[in-house]
Amino acid sequence: MAVIDFTRDMAPYHAAAGELIRLARQLPEGLGLLKSFQAKHRDQGFIDWQETVTGGALVLVAHPSIAVTDLIIDLRRRAHAQERAE
Image 1 (cartoon, rainbow, N blue to C red):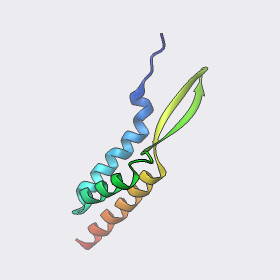
Image 2: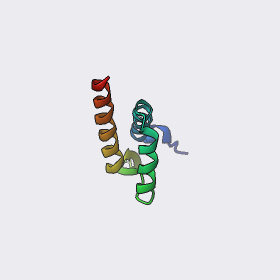
Image 3: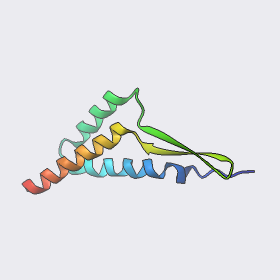
Image 4: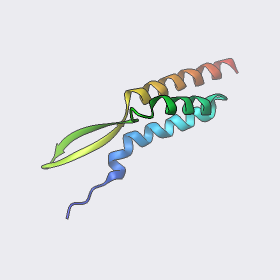
């Protein structure tokens, strides 16, 4: 019986989600930005799946969607601007 390690396959997405939460906590408006993003992108999904074949098995690896990546970039920019202002 084959063993599937979903934790490994989700690692890129989990890293992005962790960074989203960390950055949002740094910003006074962070929670509002996350809620707005979720409402706007709810039907589009937050994960893009990358398919590869390894040893004859199909492997699906979760990556953050382009929209999630754009949000991370925006939150990084805002957090950096906030740090400079302090």
